[in-house]
Length: 295
Image (cartoon, rainbow, N blue to C red; front, side):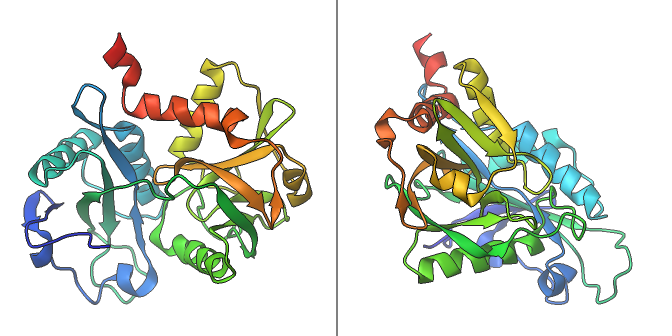
């Protein structure tokens, strides 16, 4: 897909710049070592017709925490970046959009601390990431990184080589997406989304520690609380997942998307009758502020 054209603009350290004219340093640590942090954020056209960035504060606060975890200088407050993002959306005439802020490093071929870093905010039109189909998922041969080797709760660019390899492996074998396990062999997460599975009227999801605890995951937990859906966080095996009634991914790009199968084992519950489908609808109502429009 084309992410930008000659009219697209972005925000680069306080300046509005044409995307086609923006520059970065080819000697940057970010290019050579993956030393950068980023966020994936969504904006939506609400039921009332306004543009709303979903969970903007939570995303930009996490961007700050990620930068601090990687010892990257971080000079902008959350309010400044949120205002800049709304400006970029307006200038690009976007409502249903994906937003990608990145904090990246200057030229530096050493491993010494940087005294500065740069921030950019890009946007592009966003259709449903997986479409409407249920996903065929495979257990990846790749595992999530050892949490003692990285700050895995930081959304760091270099970590996503792991995700790219796992996703490419799954697609090469005819699947839609991959599920990664942790270093102990328990289910962890997808390549860019968290997982929930349903069994006997309750939901189960991997606990924090070996996963990136997503903002959409937190929203699903909020919805479960609002709808009185029981949910448990713990350590679960692939065998337990294969015995589940249903499963779904959740993430900013993925939103809430159901699975057809795991390793060609199909889930028995019809998706339309699952807790996942109920949460999927509640999530879309939340991000588009449907309840507020009807009030």
